[in-house]
Image 1 (cartoon, rainbow over the protein chains, first blue to last red):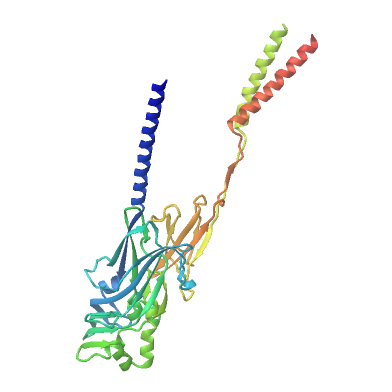
Image 2 (cartoon, each protein chain N blue to C red):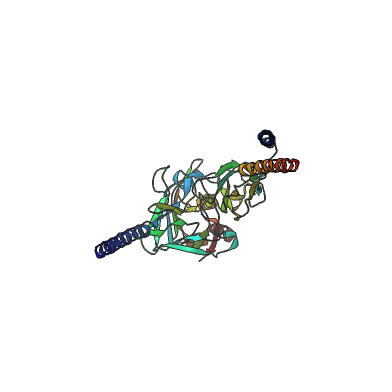
Length: 274
Length: 147
């Protein structure tokens, strides 16, 4: 009897140890697999990659388009963020890409992917359905003091202008879901999701493919005001110089572009001047 | 004699019971489930309709893949009939000429209701047995009275 009792208790102890070990292994596996990575990209779209014709007939091509971004943040929100309702984002999860980043939106060939700004690893899984970022002045290097620098060539009829336009608007942008060919921001265990900050350069220069009275073209600045400041086919101008040389009305029209400059794909953002 | 009479009665009523089944099978039944259609109307900021715009619908149980794709009509209108059994947030995106807009539609638990009015097999069997037993009982009663 004693022999059987001791065998029984040994078996019970052994079984307990096995079960405890299994639970620990399962728990570790669950903890490790409950995260992924999130990529943040910036996109000037085909307007920058391929060039385009402005509302006032100038054919633009870009060698470089430098933009400086900071405080890039992704959110899982509930309820979903609607920029029309203001700046408040009710986040249940937040991922921040720290530091200041300057990227060249014209990098790569015509079919290039959006530009990778940065990656955050080990982020909680879920759907990141909102994003915010700031466009700020660069704080060092050749283009210190500017948030957006455009380098390229403009051609109209027999006139050519090689331009370097150094702009310094500082704005915050807050967007909801990306609106485009695919849904973005979905992070699953062990996998990578991505979010995109989109910049619509047709809002600055207009689009010659649209009617002159299209709402976009009516609000756009165009290239003609820049071209009128060029000398001997060259234009190298800063924001301060633009304020001095453009008319007051033209300068205000230029400033009015930037609240609508940042998008999430084709989705609008809520913007504030900093 | 009495036993033969009772047996004959039972057999004949069994025959009636078997014939009941096809009669019941020719009965009518109704299935029902809730259905809801949303009218989606998309316009540009100046109020012009987003006609022939791309529409993409995402269901809450599969946020990555479109549940439905279509186009708005000439008035910028699209009709959405979501699967009400998929409760949660549905996303509707409408895009045209570089402009896009989206809206979330909430389907609550319990919005989906379904049912059916036809009898189950168990109900049919029980009804048949009950009727037969009623006949048998009646036959036995009258046979005892005669005696």
